[in-house]
Length: 65
Ligand code: FES
Image (cartoon, rainbow, N blue to C red; front, top):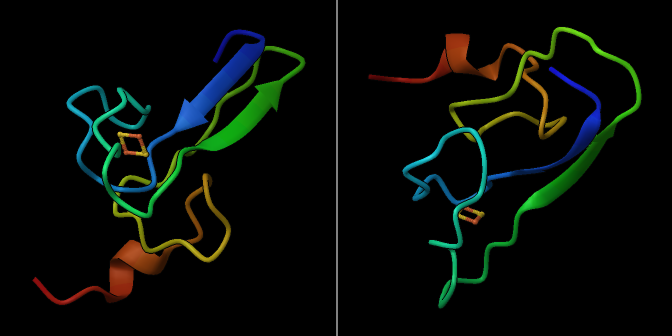
């Protein structure tokens, strides 16, 4: 990821995953801000079950399909 400010989608409704596109409006969910200072690889949570959002913590491995 390039340096910058990112807004991670916590609601799962965004069509621009893993980032917020405003689709959470009308829900109790809100995006999570993440500031990246230096270029780096980021493992964004895509399943929305991480206990360390917006980052993946491996929780997806324990989800039922
Ligand atoms: S669209 Fe999901 S938090 Fe904004």
